[in-house]
Image 1: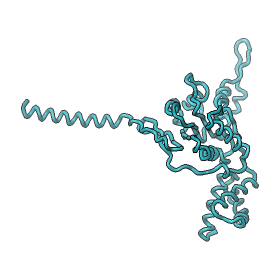
Image 2: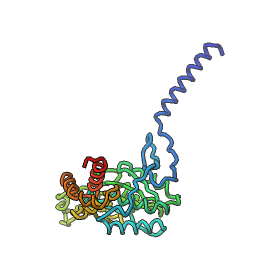
Image 3: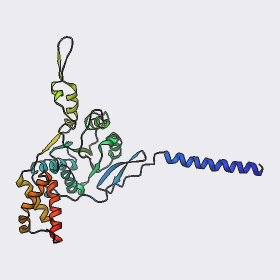
Image 4: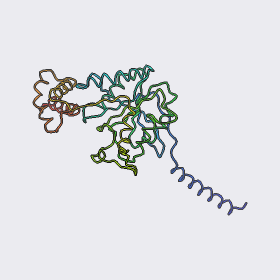
Amino acid sequence: MNESHLKQLADLLARGSELLARVEGLLPAAAAPADWRAKAFRWRKLRGNGCLFAVKTLHCIRLQDLHGVDAQKAAIEQNTRQFVAGKSANNVLLTGARGTGKSSLIKAVLNKFAGKGLRLIEVDKDDLVDLPEIVDLVRERSERFIIFCDDLSFEAGEPGFKHLKSVLDGSVAGMPDNLLVYATSNRRHLMPEFMHENLDAKHDIEGELHPAESTEEKVSLSERFGLWLSFYPFDQEHYLVICNHWLMELGLTQAQCTAARGEALRFALQRGSRSGRVAWQFARDYAGRLQTGHK
């Protein structure tokens, strides 16, 4: 082989290597192995592949930090206690007013039971199509996993709706014993409901009346959750109790907390809500201003 042929071969190999590098850049990256030492994970897509990313810093809210939701707290704590003990337990749907502690309650349950093997996987609505893959990843693990879907709602035809319904109670594979789904939503049935659906009915040729099937489809998902917990707006006294709690946690004295009641009510009025979230936001604002001398 002469020098000219060698040069052509070298050029061809160089172009081949360049082309291969470009093609590799378009291919999905290999999924990184999960760090199973973590207590919580987020399911995220990395160049087309789903991965469990460990959460480095957990939200350290405790069950005793949540006020005004004692019945809901007792119910989900008992359900989770059964689950981590290897007993039968239910998937949980937490619905109702915004800012009343639905997602905080799930995070607090994780903090309480993480030492007993409880783990949490947060999955966004758009990634619910990957639920079968997540189930396969954790099926053989010794830990107990909660799939956490926050602020969940669906519009008609969204693919995640059917995937979640299938995983909860409809897949031929079945849900593993070490996995539950805890979801929060402002909608009890997870989908918008319209007045015309209550009136929507049709008659066949024989005059037989059929209920609207669209309503049945919407109810079918929420019914797959064995435990429903409802949350309601806080009254003024509950709101002030929560403000007092967080102000004390942030280092204020009881006398300072009592003096802050008027400010707390004005803050809620400005926000148009007396929720636990607003109480936390007020406490951070008020304590920060007080500690810097700008009350």
